[in-house]
View 1: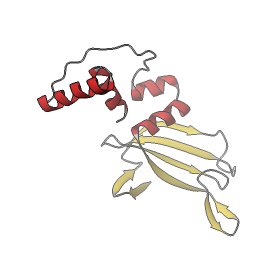
View 2: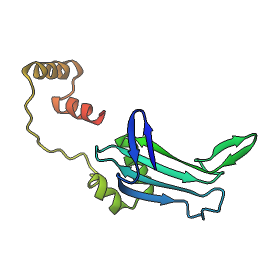
View 3: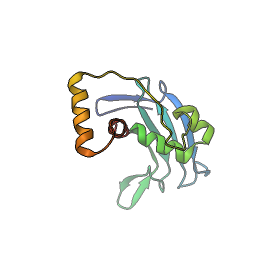
Length: 143
């Protein structure tokens, strides 16, 4: 399936399949539903889903009448991770998103930033009472 959404091309034939889920019903069942998570060459994730007239992919065809349908849904990185946590095995999840770290252990990282930004970082640390490391970690978590 190919779609243009927000001026971006999504194509299930050229994207890499990350994982698949279905609700264990046959396609003849009105509540049948299946979803496949894909990743584009650009790194963006999207979901291809389809289902029967009683699934979340149903579309109205008139007065109290419904039909099964399919659609492509662009996903943020976080939304793709949430979908994968819910629908993939632990091994498949970690193969795509890396090992799950269960603690907040710290790793030293050396970075260089412009002097003006370093001054802003020191000022923010002084004003908030947070460490410079915590401020940078918060910024990265919010991305």
